Image (tube, rainbow, N blue to C red; front, side, top):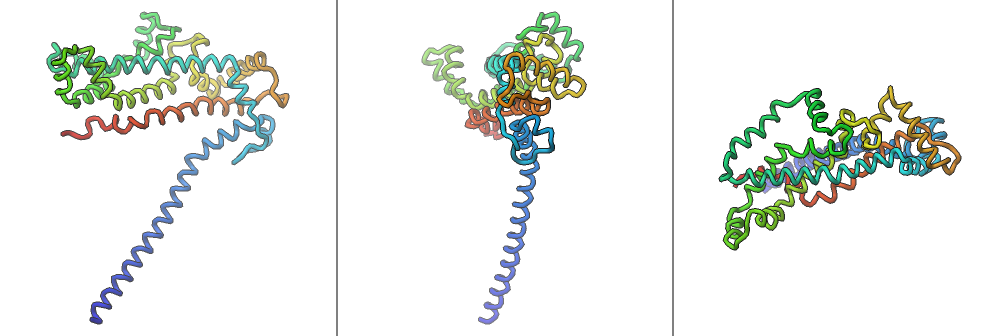
Length: 315
């Protein structure tokens, strides 16, 4: 009996040691995660705080956690600036048109190539696969875009990236997982391929459509390379390219002067009687470019994880 009691006491002491070590690890882990979160979030917070401060006060010294002289004039200056607002409208138009067109093209191709009875199906797949391994150079791509008449044309944001082989393969894999009995029953009822595609395939493919549309929207919003290579008309500049020009060291001053001069002539003086300094203008533009993406993900979150699980499990 006494031996059993001693055994229980030893086990209890060992459990207490393990639990104590576990609590110490939890405390260390929580502290490390708090520090890591602070390191990752603080740069964004600093940019936001800096953009909400008056330019003259920001020049007095660093701003750490809260604006010393709060103002919204910097954002009013950015939003009402005709140069930036035009770029914002072009970006919105691109985000609405290009991803929708791209997802439509890829979905149609995926549905057609998911049918094993399609003549030349394997050859078509190999043909689409070639550009993934043998891509054109910047010069050759520029020549093609120029020959197609897409230089300084809004369609350069839409047509060149309309089809993506990898996106099409993901969509085709998802479609192939849909039971063929659904299509067969629809054809027995007299439905053709168009009706099957619209009434069966599309409703069941919402997860993959949402996932691919999310990536397309983010890619279209963040891309400035297309403007850099193929656009010289300022009326077709996108917001990311404006930010790129503002941040670029050797061209920042001239770009900022142009932006500020257009803003001053169209908006007039701010409420405090001062124009924003280049630094606060940079921060305000950076926040304006970044924040809209934060509101995109919640609309796709419902289908995002399910769409990204395509092909992960084989039944």
